[in-house]
Image 1 (spheres, rainbow, N blue to C red):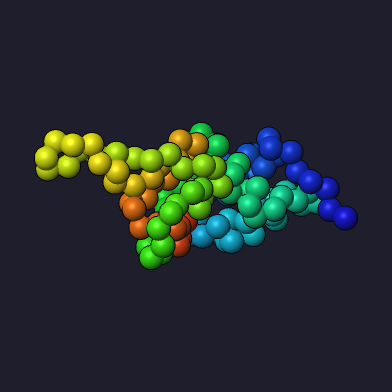
Image 2 (spheres, rainbow, N blue to C red):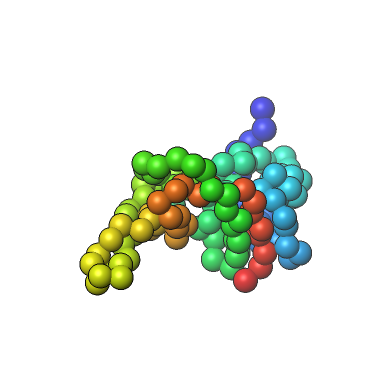
Length: 121
Ligand SMILES: [Zn+2]
């Protein structure tokens, strides 16, 4: 059994890993895992810690899923809040969703992350 790394250990390894930008979550996981050895971190936990770490910039490429009724954020799993805009008649209208936790936003058609790019801020 491998030992589970603490948040701080993961953050440390993350900061060292993004000296050069990393083009996908799986690649980032590979690099971080090497640095953490003999400790380990799961892919989903790594993503959540990266989202919380100041000093790391995450660019997300989105792909549209033709599905409505969006409930939770595809990035961090938190609940979405409705996003409103003002339409041409000056009325408030529902235009999409935003995640308050990680700032991921999407239109009425759900957009899901298809690619992540991690780099130093
Ligand atoms: Zn989120």
